[in-house]
Length: 52
Image (cartoon, rainbow, N blue to C red):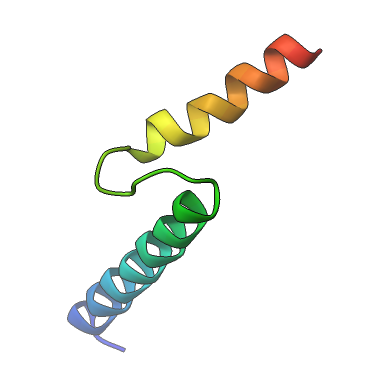
């Protein structure tokens, strides 16, 4: 496998991950256009810290 093939595979994986992220964000009632991964996962991090 050439480097360009590996890069293309990584781009596909990243696109799939973002698609999955958008589905999860929508499941939790957020708009994927208005929230970043950092903000979204920060909500859970804050909850866990406060819960403990």
